[in-house]
Image 1 (cartoon, helix red, strand yellow):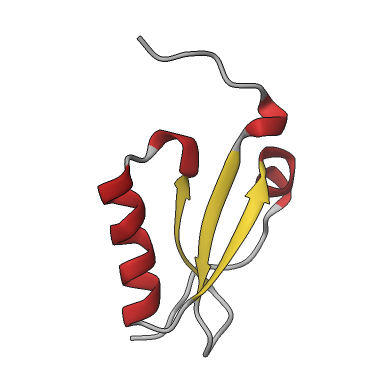
Image 2 (cartoon, rainbow, N blue to C red; image 1 turned 180 degrees about the horizontal axis):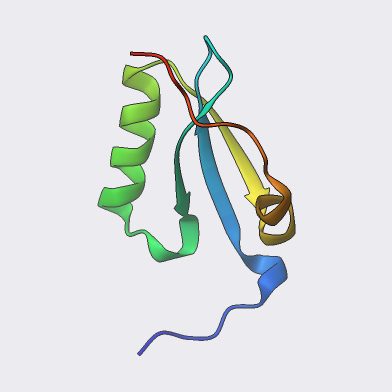
Length: 70
């Protein structure tokens, strides 16, 4: 069973395109296992994406458009 997590403890990782500064992917960090976290960083590294860590409140206000690069 999953344990309760406080809203202020929720961290959301967002990968951002370096070219257009658009949003590429995001993940609720506390929901990912080690393999999934590694895959997230591997993708960010492969495509040279910036990774930002947001709180739950910051994520609600996050208004970066989706990446439109090929």
